[in-house]
Image (cartoon, rainbow, N blue to C red):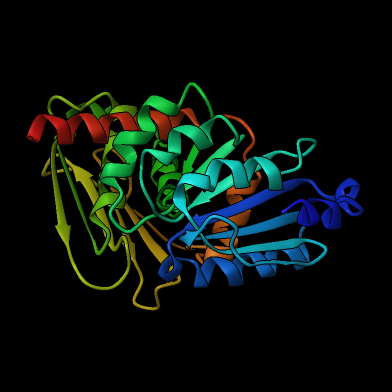
Length: 286
C-alpha cells in the first residue's frame, strides 16, 4: 500500500481529486471502467477497493490508478487513509457494503457519492453525516435535468400564480427511490408537503418516464420521449397559452454523471433537504 502512495506521488501536482470507488465485487465492474475513462481524460486519481477476505489484498498500481482486490471491510478506513493524498480532495463513490462503514469514511472524505440498488438503509445512515461531509447520490444527479426543466416552468408568471392550487403529483418510472427524491424536492420547494397527494407508479424502462403536477384543470408535465434521449414539456395553466417544447435529456451515462458530481465541492442543500424528507416519510410509514 505504501508503494501505491509513492508511485502516484510524482503526478500529484497535476491532479485535482482522488476518487475512491468502494463496494462488493459484483458492484465494481462498471465503476472500474468509469474510473478508467475519467483518469485518462480528467485530472483525477482513481482508487478501486473491492471487499473480500484479505487483510492485505493484492494491489495493482499505475500512475493514476490503484486497485485493491478483496479487502476485508474492517480495514476500509485504513486503506482509504493510506491511499488518499492529503493535498487533494477525496471523493468516495459508495457502491454498497455495511452502512456502518459510512461514518468512518465521512471523517476521511470531502464528499461521499452514494450509488446503491436499494438506497433507503444507506440514506438513513447518511442523514446524520451531512454535518461531517458533503453528500451526493447518482440518483439525484440523474434528476438534475428533470429538476431544471420543472424549475423553468416557474419562470412563467401564470404558473407561479397557479402553483398554490396544485394538489396532485404523479410520477411514473422504473426507479421509485429516484421518483421519491424528486417528489420530496418538489413538494419542499413548493411548500406543499401537507396538501400534495403524491402517487409514485413503478413501470419498466427508464428510471423516470413521466412527471405531472397540477390541480385537475391546470397541469405541468414532463415526459420522456420514445427515443429516450429527449423530454417533452407542457404547461397548461389559466391565462397562459399552452406551451410545448422538446429538449435534450443530456448525457445520462455513469461517466458523465460522476463527472458532474466531481464538479460539486460544496454541500448540496437541496439534496440534503430532499433526503431528509424521504427518510422521515418512510419512517412515518413504518
